[in-house]
Image (tube, rainbow, N blue to C red):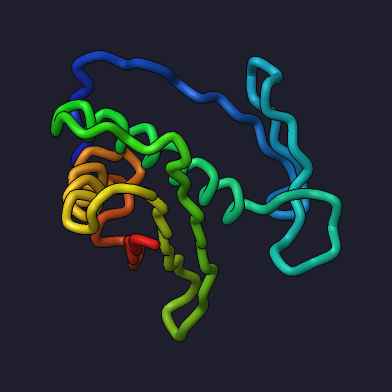
Length: 142
């Protein structure tokens, strides 16, 4: 069965990236703002890898979504909010798969408030929505 596409109300942005050479190649965005060499994970190659790029994208999006959730919940985010994202590339008998952890530091917020904020952000974040039920995720308050 073909996947069902969500009907967009309004396209806010379209990222356009041209990649050649796969995991040992290069990627460049149409506007030239992204221009990276790629290397296979765990090698001494000169570039980054897709898992690092995914971790950076997800954590940046999640942190911005936390800001949206905080405003809705009338919570002031700490200035030193940080997310350390970890993305594992795994393999089993069925093939490759990803597992991730978002380790969130919200200094000064009570744990129950921080947890409610992280839960709300996880419901709103486009990366979380895209990976839900597809990528094992742990959200840890640190």
